[in-house]
Image (cartoon, rainbow, N blue to C red):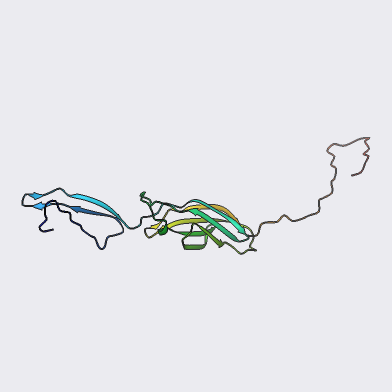
Length: 178
């Protein structure tokens, strides 16, 4: 500002700020010299979200799972997040293998087919991330989710009871029926 009026307020608008923390500074300059720099840090955009919490999942029918979680309300620096700006990503793992990925989930619960309904029961893990334009959160993990057709115990006719004798018997008669 070339000719400032003492006591006046001036506004600067950054028309293209970078996402993240931006530092703006002002100093006065006149014939007597230059003042100390006065700075302000301004957060712009959406930050990296905290992880989701309260992750749960249950098989609701053979091969179909319902997962739920709580979206974060803050980013990793503690700033509040608008819940409308937080989406989720769900990864399905079977052992060391990534089975499927679901992205751009807007709700905090999600139903999906984890395996074929007649697949043999197996163990799966879920990795859930909160996602904003600032990036992905750290992962929230759920391990040991069983899905698929439940094991069934084979039906067998009970074996007849057979008496066992652990010591030799002399002059002993057994009476009755088994």
